[in-house]
Figure (cartoon, rainbow, N blue to C red):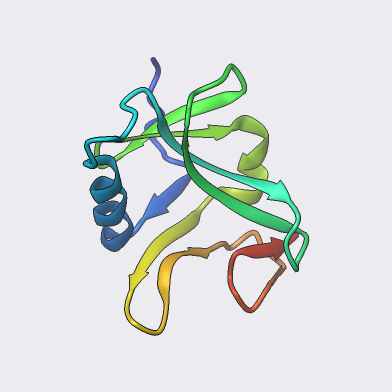
Length: 114
């Protein structure tokens, strides 16, 4: 499997630590990879996808800190150079997305417009 040298997205240390924690669970399906993508919907028009999934023929493969990642080729136009972080505090907990391609974002940060 070809690995991209330049990854389309980046993860902060907090995001990497949380993803590796999720992957270390004994029930984790080792055949799945981290899918980064978008889908229609959300308050601003498009929502982010961050989930574990199987690779398809429409996906490009890349690794970040030994985490196997996949992304649909067509989603690159929306996600290239995006940074994914994980907030673990009491006031906000979860993954956050800093997307330079978004022209608008919703207040919750989980959807965007282009």
